[in-house]
Amino acid sequence: MKKKVLSAILSVAMVAALLVGCGNAAEETEAPAATEEAPAEEAPAEEAEAPAEDAAPAEDAAAGGGTYAFVSKSAGNPFNERQATGFEEAVADLGGTAIIQHPESATADAQITVIQSLISQGVDSICVAANDENALQAALEEAAAEGIKVCSVDSTVNVASRLTHVNQAGVTEIGQCLMDAVYDITGGEGQWAILSATSQAANQNAWIESMKEIMAADEKYAKLELVEVAYGDDEPQKSTDQTQALLQNYPDLKVICAPTTVGIAAAAKVLQDQGSSVKLTGLGLPSEMAEYIGDDDAHSCPYMFLWNPIDLGRLGAYTSAALVNGDITGAEGDTFTAGDMGDYTVVKAGDGGTEIILGAPFKFDPSNIEEWKEVY
Ligand code: RAM
Image (cartoon, rainbow, N blue to C red):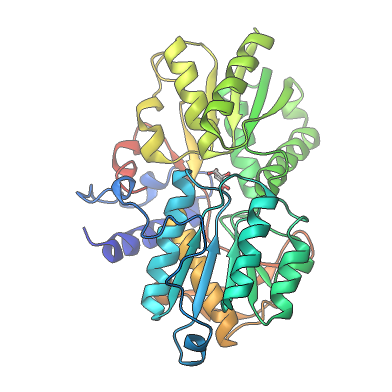
């Protein structure tokens, strides 16, 4: 199936999912037809960790093409690769040049090096999934001073560092989905732990904060005990080690919630291989998690959530272009058309800045995982 057709189906499903919130998207929408061209097998066109050599010079922007850069959190994470694929697709639609940069590690320093190189290349925009909310500020302010339009995607930078943020879903909405899942899977009481990405990741930290606030605000959660927030740094081996440590340190642990696709995949394997009775939920890529999702003792994850990372990348590109073209400034109330994804409005974000929200989280469970695993 051609990517565009696939994207159109996904967009319809995403809109429908918006209406059902944490509900199971497949119950309300037509699940995508299985496709022979699974995104899991598609290598992103540019994997370069060093600045791309074929980047168009700044003059191309004046000619109407535009050079749009995407900086992911780190290399080797399939979620980031799918975002990059979407970003490239949208830039191709716009007739521009995409520069995709996956830093070597999920650190602010690695991203600062990449951002500085992009500034010297004279790109028109930088769209970054931040490894640290505040640490990129000097580099991004320098970019802005050079006339480069800066937005964040997936994981925000602070208000001073960006014009707007492209958010996958509302923070509280994701926090509520995850908290409801922990409540449901534990049976409403007992010990649970979080396996996160890096300790500086703005997106994971916001979701974790939201979960804690939801838990504290309602008596319903009073019998749940959050014993630890562990950090696997979005590295498979460290996430595996952290999962094993949680199992060892908390013999009464009932549930691990991993709000990271890298963490949840690593934890799922540990739990399932060990035949552990500890259950798992969180945010995962269907293609990586299909073998672990099931209602029985043989599977570690009853269900999990995510959004479409390809569409997230596409929206990041369309937002970048709208900023470069002057269609939006990133102010609350600005509207723009994101190609065939439709119209989006810039809204107020929780940190006092603005954001553009892609949609609502999808729920993936045994009823739909076989179909979605082919999509992303
Ligand atoms: C990981 C990354 C990414 C996050 C997903 C859910 O791939 O940390 O930033 O959005 O998980």
